[in-house]
Structures are given as C-alpha cells and as structure tokens.
Image (cartoon, rainbow, N blue to C red):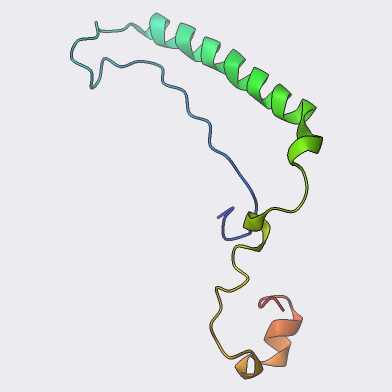
Length: 91
C-alpha cells in the first residue's frame, strides 16, 4: 500500500530462531526466543535512532515519490474532469 501511495519505506526483519527449518541448529526454548527478540528490539531501536539522526541526509524527493507518474495509460483527455479534479488522477 505504501508503494501505491508513493511513500518511501523500508522493511526491517529480525530472525529469532532457526530451529524450525535449520536441522543442524539445536531446538530453542521460549526463553531463548524472548531473549533474542529483546536483543533484536534493541538493534531495531538503534537503527531507527540512526535513521532519525541522519534524516537530513536522505530526506527530500526520491524516485519512489513519483513511481506511479506513468502508471496510467489512459489518454488524459478521456479522463473525466471531475475525476482528475478530486485528485484520483495525477497531472
């Protein structure tokens, strides 16, 4: 949905355990998963703090903000004025 709204975004994923699919890893306990989850939370918080501290370096216009500019192939004069006027169709 963010891409459809031309909003830049990033995904951050952290693994808590490998025992479900990695046969050479030992089984984990809930406590182990929670400990890893808490550590991953600290890493995520540090990453977000870093992004915020350096926001001026990446803020501003990016290609993703106009990713749908050419997505509509309808001949522009064929689009009803009221549709374009309410912002459903970009100019």
